[in-house]
Amino acid sequence: MNKLLEVENVTMIFGGITALGGISFHLGEGEVLGLIGPNGAGKTTLFNVISGLLPPTSGEIKLSGSSIVGLRPDQICAYGAVRTFQSASLLIGMSVWDNVHVASLFRSPSRSKGESARDCTARAIAFCGLQDRVDAVAETLTTGEQKQVEIARAMASNPKVLMTDEILAGLDATDSESILQMLLGLKDQGVSLLFVEHDVRSVMRISDRVVVIAQGKKLAEGKPDEVARQPEVIEVYLGTRYAQNH
Image (tube, rainbow, N blue to C red; front, side, top):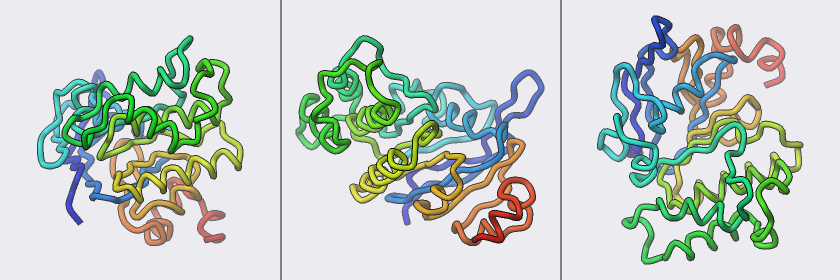
């Protein structure tokens, strides 16, 4: 499997506090990589570094073999890596269509296959089942619909890599299942997923591999069933009850 996203010895220090300490892993083409760990482990900081919101103190991040360290988030999006946030960051006062259409303006022309921005917007909205909500204003949407718009916006930029940060947070079982099916549908379309989630069962269910971080360092990496059996992962994060039931 070709390495699409490579994180190499990434360190992030805030005022003497090491939030990330030399983390390395890769995401392969067409792969779902789950990223889990306790609160404060550094998952969101890592996302912020990869997506260009924060420059790493040291280390390298490559997308398709090219360094993306130092690039702005919009430049990284144009290279093919996009992210969602824990709370849907929709444009208030704007419709679903406009929210998604804005994202399509940052798409990579090389991956657009002749589609216009409007084509990309319509395709993303249809994939996420939002055709009947195109004129709805962002703040009138349910939490589940807002998460769907987040995914539609990511799709509209024609990404190679989608990074989801707690996309299931605040959703009931029905909405969570709907979002998981959308993510699996993206994988079927060749999009690679970096999936950060507190819902361990969902991570283990859809991930090809899992990386566990704790206190800013990589604790374990491997297939979901292998990682779930490692004593240090059980002790630090999963707990004995999860291990006994799986």
